[in-house]
Image (cartoon, rainbow, N blue to C red; front, side, top):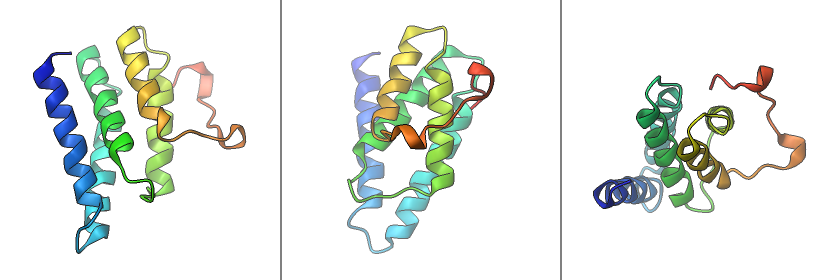
Length: 123
């Protein structure tokens, strides 16, 4: 990944972090984050490995940049987990690594693990 790309991802991460904290309408900021994550989950299923990698990278930036007290809707967090778990089985190592980093923020208890049907996730 190029330095300008890294800066862009960091910017988006900080932008969404600011949108979910210290704003008058915190709910609107959280809705922006959740809608963005849902869109990126769709992108993780792209045929293009560049798009899959960048989607996983952005998901990781957004999740890891969130405040500790920010709680996503369970539907959104489940969708992110399923999408990123599926990408941990991607052929491209960079995509697997980006998906693992994205999942770091949503560390799960073994009792809460999501089973991906057939061993190959469809996101």
